[in-house]
Image (cartoon, rainbow, N blue to C red):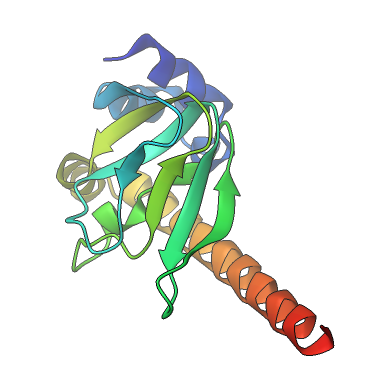
Length: 156
């Protein structure tokens, strides 16, 4: 277990409604990952093996547009989760994640989290309820950003 993973789970809203014992089970699956500035954690269409919590730094969630330009969709900050595709079939990342500065994360093997969720249904319920909120929030943010870009394009 990574000591930071226990601390960050205790401070992360994503896991706030779980008991300490349940958070400890999840923390025991964590591994520390460090990325330098401008390094990819994963790219769109990569096999999704890990789910992450950001400890420090910032990550850009990106998607390549039709013209080959990579669009910045969302910035992930300390305590945020990313890589949720590791918990949802077909287990393929739908966007990319790139370090905007030196970054530290705790990574959790998606299959181990799924196994734990199947063994403890309360953990599974909380993870998937919160995951649906993250997906909804990020979808709204991405659509809003695209809408703003379209308006700016029309007005210029």
